[in-house]
Length: 215
Image 1 (cartoon, one colour):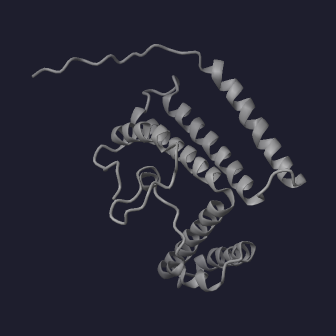
Image 2 (cartoon, helix red, strand yellow):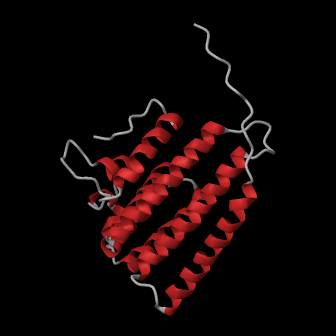
Image 3 (cartoon, rainbow, N blue to C red):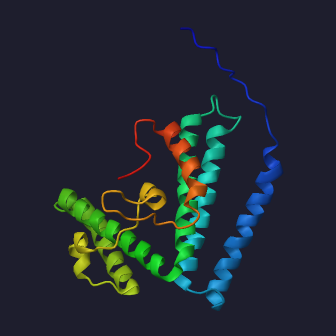
C-alpha cells in the first residue's frame, strides 16, 4: 500500500500579532505579582511565589517552542516542540491543582522539591564524594539544603533520609486520571476533563510508546 505524500509547507500565520501582547502580559503579571508579594497584598505568600515561578517557566517553555518551530531553522523540529508543548500543558495542570488548595498543596509541592534535591545530593555524594574537585560543590549544595530546610520547617533528618518523606506530588497522569490500583481520585478536581483529551493526544504524538493513563 502506498501512502500519500504529506505536504511539507504549511500556511504561515502572523506570529507577532499574539506574541507581543503575550510577552507584555507575562511581564505585567511577573512584575506585579513580585511587587504585591513584597507589599503583603498577595497571600499565602508561598503559593504566589510558586505561581510566579510557574509563570516564568511557562514563558520560557513557550520561547523554546517558538525557537524549535522558527522559520530560521533549517527544518522545523515538530517532535521536540510537541514534547515542550506537553510540558507547557503540565505547567498549567500544576497551577490549576495549586489553586484548588493553595496553602496545603503548595506545602506538598515544596516538600516534594526538597525531597528530590536531597536525593540528588545523596546520589552525588555516593558517586563523587571521594573526588576532591567535587568537595566545594557538594559543600555548597549541602549548605543550601540546610537553609532551605529551615525556611520550610523541615527536619534535618530528611536531609540524610529523604526517602522517609511521605509527601508526593502526583505525576501528570495521576493528576488527571487518578490511580486505579490504589483507587485514588484525580488530584485535579472539576477541570481535569479540560486537560485530559489534549494531554492524551500530545503524549501520543511526543512519545507513542508510553501509556497515557497511569495505574
